[in-house]
Image: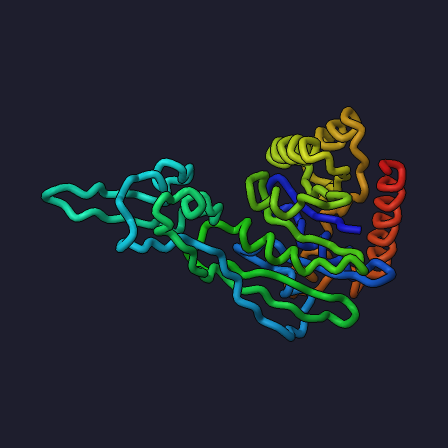
Length: 287
């Protein structure tokens, strides 16, 4: 089973839910931190890293001895990652590759009439694999300046172990990195807060998951502040509220020290295990 933990906005407690859930489940568990731009699950899990793997993507390389500067590669690149300067009597032709815009689709190489385009590897980040006791841990770290995080996210997900219950800590928001993270999940937990911003972004996240046909439930963090509009929204849309976490000084203090709640408060360990049991029941009914 693959359970992703997402949120329409940052700062709702997504990583808190993902890490404490992973620590509370009875059985073989794996935690993947797919928030590759700012991974922080390792701060709470303290994994022992055993492997570090370079993450690469293919980008085009032009053999200008074969290139006729026809411009077809520029036309087929929908991401504007290629610019062709046409050859003339006064100007030598040239092809410019903007590798940060390249999505590694390979169309330019496949359609080049002169076979003047090949692909080379470009390093975009690293993947680290380790253990937190019995829990397998994987995360990715995107290189500074890189923008195509879904490429790294998909490579992190290649380490999903089907023999284990996999928890995916997704990036915040509803854009491409989130889609890459939650796609293929059996269930998605949306973490929100009872505020106007929380409700607005929860609504967007629910729309995304409905489009992807992924069953979902909601965890309301800091549940005793704000208003009841998030709860009302969930009721009106038949979305189960899996857990409510109050605005608790102990929770905040432990978080600030990088200590998961369940390690100091066993009541929360039972709550997270109960939530997992509820998710299993929901998934059975969906099947």
